Length: 301
Picture (tube, rainbow, N blue to C red):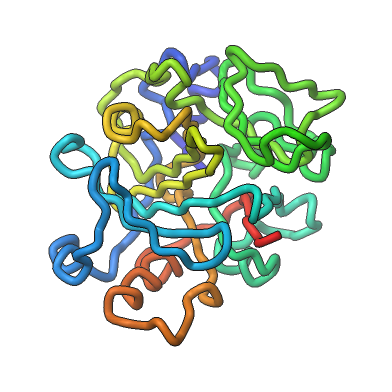
């Protein structure tokens, strides 16, 4: 949750016209087990710029540590996950819908759901109510549309012949709340649109960030920054260095920014020093975790 951001919610903060109460002001610090120098020394395959070098963990799921480098001096390295929606399905989870007394941590969510990949969804209030549209199995979980946020991550369409997961831009695309075209949906902030326009302002506020992007080939990319940075800088970096990104949206940030890749995906017969380090990064062993009321899970079909 983003405490500083709450006043911006009631004042009608917009992802098109950012304010100082944007989700980049989140508090919380995530400790890291290893420093950047050590990471770069043992990870010669860290990906740079357009050439992200993916490590395939399973059908439909690949990971990388992407260092944008010189083109993006204000953006740190990011954990990156590539998901093929034709081979992996997405599911929304909210703690109240699952009749839990308190939100679990991402580790507890993984144990409970058994998903291969889990990452945090969008923003929430102090009482853990979700901010924006939230749908599971085609039914609204009770949250209302946010009038100024224009990004919606959708998955599992109700009709055949369309993409199985997308980033929708409500500025140019419709989402019928009475007859939702997708079973799973989570609204948040639009970051980069199909015209390569950055949809947030440069405020100077920095935090850990979680980003969902859709590529021109229909893959879904999930990024989590390994250090604090601004949404604007990430948006500019995606625009300038990753032409494959069609559009992107920002989920919750700060101490809520979290991703986890199940240990079961890392094949024991392929373990080496590099893979063990990546396994620690993606397994959540190098950072602290706070309870998350809403997460998005990924499982192989």
